[in-house]
Image (tube, rainbow, N blue to C red; front, side, top):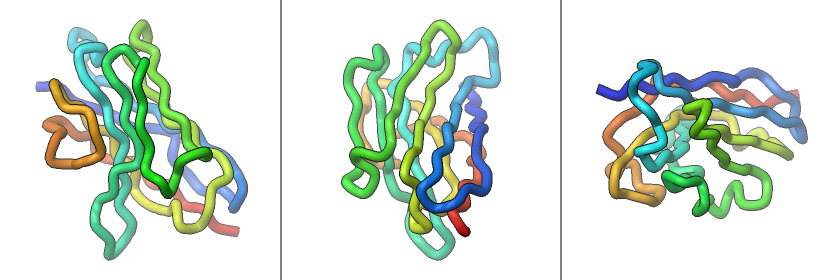
Length: 125
C-alpha cells in the first residue's frame, strides 16, 4: 500500500509563492514507478486537477487556471515531487492533494489510486 504525505501548505498573500512537496511515507516504496498528479478542492467545489508529471519527469501537464504560474517537478533520488506555486491568487485557496497512478497520465481524479491527506493553501491579504 502506497501512502503519500503532502507538506508545504500555509497562508500567503496574493502574489506570493509556496512550494508543496509530496513524499511516500514508506521508505521501501519508490515513487519513481508512478505518475503523480496534484489536485485541489475548495469549499463547496469539486476536486480539480491542477498538474501532473510522468514517471521520468520529462512530461508535465497543467490546468489552464495555473498554467504559467505553477511548476511541477520531481526528484526521484529523494522520492519527492514538488509543486512550485507562484503569483498566487485568492482563487487558488484550497486543500491540495497529491495522488499516484500507474499507467495513467492526466488530470482526471478517477485515474489515480493512491491519495495523500492534503495540505491547506490559503491565499489572503
